[in-house]
Length: 471
Ligand SMILES: O=P(O)(O)OC[C@H](O)CO
Image 1: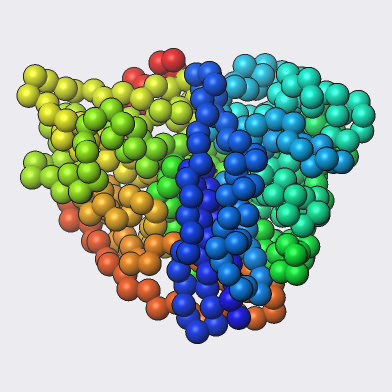
Image 2 (image 1 turned 90 degrees about the vertical axis):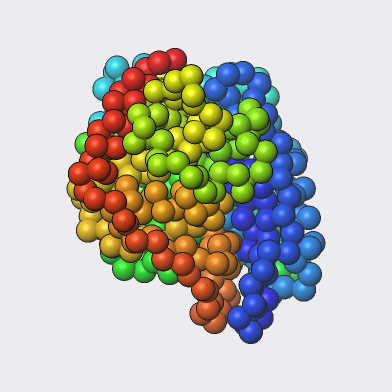
């Protein structure tokens, strides 16, 4: 048995082929363009993503099933008859609907979104992006009048184009702010609130099962990338948690069949996966910019090779009073402040490029520690945290993370856990199970005293306060 898992993420599309002999490897990976037509706007080309997906399927060779994981909240509009995209993909990071949401918040609408979808009013989620398309895009309006409009997250568009099935899964639907979290169905009141016609949305299906076929190959799993990573890390019990350091940093903790609501902590209850009729929930907290902040620093010329910023001779920058707040797209959990601006604070004439990079890495770790602290208020998060993603290979970063989380961190040698989780679910959809993957891991233990870490966090909290509402 050979399974192809396509990881369609924010910066790339990659395919992992896993087989029944225990093999698992990425066989093709391609980056796509990021379009920024205006400040705060982030778009992808639907056709480019689709063509990358097709290239991945082609590169996978002979396979028995396909699983697809997606970038979550990113969404678009397309035409039911021609399949043609009517809009670009509006990416989860896109901020264009901030004013619309401010207005809804002032009219007291957040109570409804929190109680039904579990989500605050933030441009992150798909609902306001779809509302924006319905009011600002003439082709979308025309298709709506003609009765051929389809709206959805990227998974629904890919499935429609690849298999002819207009479907999404419960995890992805839970990121739109249009789904009733308890029932796992579209919520009429939420659709009315955002002006999104329910009849234009895809059918919500379990995460594992039938999503049609690409040629003769069945698609047997569809899931959000973060949830796929949660599965790929082997998290199965309440309190099991992982952090993926991709474009952003996303921490998810399993909460079993309980929806844990934590609006005061700024955490998001979400669906981990739905198998048959059983919904497993998780609590999610994200930092919008992690690797994206590191890449940005590279573009600014602060380093030329990642190896330059994986060890430092100097003590932590924060201990010298230099802090960086990675709010390039604003602050998510626990602050939810889209107006926050990224900043370095505490520079002096002797500050070097290396110091700035050191502070940047620490800033991502310190933001993540705020997310885990918020989670600890609501769930008993496991003492050993498993991390993956590009920054998981930066030794300085992971050790600093262990210090500020005051927990043991485990990294894996094979770090394609998002695609691997997706492959495992797709294999389940085929009625079989992939053999357990023997992954060598490295363990990082916290080695700073509590008082020192407390001082660092207090200093960082001051920097975060300054960054809020800056833009
Ligand atoms: O595509 P990634 O890995 O940056 O993850 C995107 C997140 O799922 C957005 O919520």
